[in-house]
Length: 216
Length: 215
Image (cartoon, rainbow over all chains, first blue to last red; front, side, top):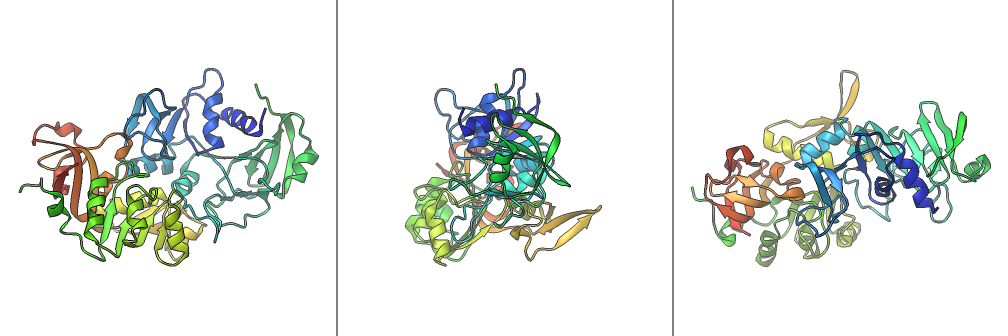
């Protein structure tokens, strides 16, 4: 199983039936492919609708996801303007949002919208999502492409949100973020605590109930 | 007052140095014909308030590439490398605003509010220089209203009274911007007689709309 599939499968286990969920572009979006049996979620798309579904058949004019790609809308879906879309996001009506990160730290701070002087795409809806969603999950490969840790003591990049992350799910492990710092809750099959330590720059506590990810 | 007019009549109001709001999300729901015609007029030093700067060949992206803008107020520029290039070269001023904050600032502008209080951006550089207000023990940023001289709106259907329907995700910022500008110009794919849109279905009431152009 490749790293992205491990992450997506584990993220999908966070969803309960009937949840309203917002998924970021990339790995987070893959989680929708691995929903547990009997779990249906309603996907919210920041550009203004609920009931996001993968494209089936011909592209419908004017119906795209937050990345501008053609998608479908389920029966029972609803379309609205951007103020309504972010009332849903900010108002606590999204149960879970899953986003990628450039950096995340042991206090739950998240940086994922700019690298000064290099890459400044803008925050889009990310700052609203992390400030308003009931649960914020960071889903990403554990380290950068160069192997450098992305889970840090303290983010160096400009923040997307301060103390907003509730859980970090990577190809190596699951961290729960609490007021007392990070707790290592699960590890992927074959991963050791030493592996996690070697690839993590943050301090963390090994949870008493540490277990192995159950990946079907 | 007749609202349906030619594109040249409608765009006459737009002058150099004005502030425009332009609907759309990655050019979905952006009035491309109004932008193309505006490009031929040579209007320059414009400020544009919009969700994003699309791509170089689409929507607001074309105004960026043709260097008609001095400033943009947007939530995202990542899909248009030219916006980033002009920003880094000091040729274009870019104000990046969280998308939900931008929507509420525009809504506040049209709704007669003095601003909105939002938790979005607390503890980030977005909060720099802004007033933090505590309500019932929770902190919020004061974000001020946004208004424009002209809004360029894309509708699926307009009736001759100016009532608008939008299609799917082409709605996005369009209804909000139609409330927040002195002059509102709509590019409509379909124009029908007043009365043909059920009042219950109207998404933007006609009183907000000044000019309607056949898209």
